[in-house]
Image (cartoon, rainbow, N blue to C red):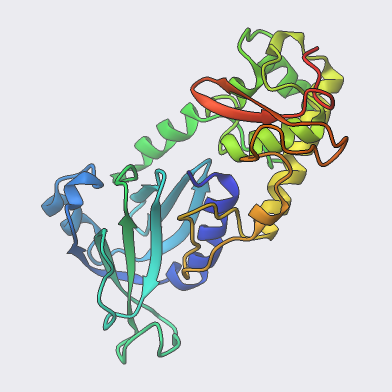
Length: 289
């Protein structure tokens, strides 16, 4: 599932083209009702003639903000993709809907037609993604349910420690809870816990302030590195132009089979299942207490 670095990469690749463009129409694709949480006619009518004034990210959500304050909210699920395309290029399979947009500035001929029209397509093989319209109050309510952004400079270690110290769950389970921190998933939780030397099953209420300081620092390092590398592509993830990420070549523990030598101590890595998710760790470098 795309996590914070992947969604941020999609935002960065789409924003230069989308911001300032006007939505001309919405096009039905394959089974849009599997993805779209609004009735099609309502959706198609509301998005027409809206100029996109910003492309925002909150956690794992993308939001195209229109000039009327409405946001088109997109969650990519496990295999969702937002892809720019020329109007003359036929859609691939599993394209569920598309927006026809008109740019206010010249775009490359490979992307836009003579009238500066281009497409933003949503495709999703497994159909776990979601698209919906939110008014300003709905957007505020969504943001309130999510925890702080881990890269937000206003978030400090003492604040995060206070949020963790009353929890009895494992630290890995807590990191996957979007109400604690927004945007963290399985990949970057495993990587940050390894770097911080924290066992994924360790209970939150046993962590010291120094543990949390180390964890927050490593989370920020891992996320920043992954954004620089345009995200992690295990199978399906691509950015807004169709290019894969490259951080998969720098992963230290995530996805490694049990018994793989630890990149730090050369001992065998182990795997444990927490909150329904597999976690890879080194029992030497990440002791249970």
